[in-house]
Image (tube, rainbow, N blue to C red; front, side):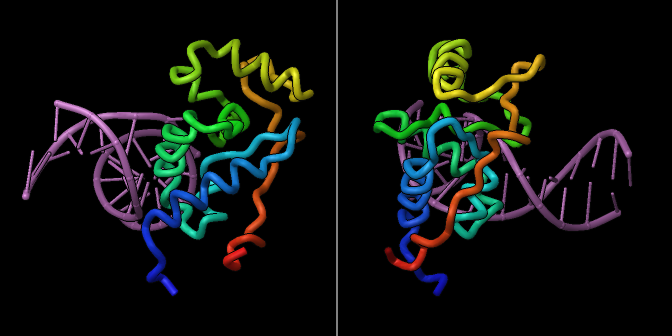
Amino acid sequence: MSSYKKLDFFDRVFKIVAKIPKGKVTTYGKIAEACGIRSAARTVGWALNSAKNSNLPCHRVVNRFGALTGRVHFGDPALMESLLKSEGVEFLEDGCVNLQKHLWTPEKSFSNNG
DNA sequence: AAGCTGACCTCGC
DNA sequence: GGCGAGGCCAGCT
């Protein structure tokens, strides 16, 4: 079943990111893995690049360190912090998100053509 | 049309 | 355990 359209993976990311619960954050790898391809972690980021044009909560997506890498696309890192903090997400001295508390794992339930 | 780049992660030595 | 290279997909030049 590896004959699915390529764009399918791309869309897959949008659906997952769109399903991220408020006050939670996930990582690119988790999304990529949920899509079925953990190696496509960077593609997930690229997907968000186009997703930033949508209403997807891109700010809830961070790297495995919890650092807000997409700050460049948001304009300012404080903006993402403000958004996340507003949702109740805690930050560490390093400026990273408390993944151990807010780390959310995407569900692959929808992967069943749902 | 071909090649490089991009918000990353995982594997190999 | 640390460093280096590979992988995935799409967009831009």
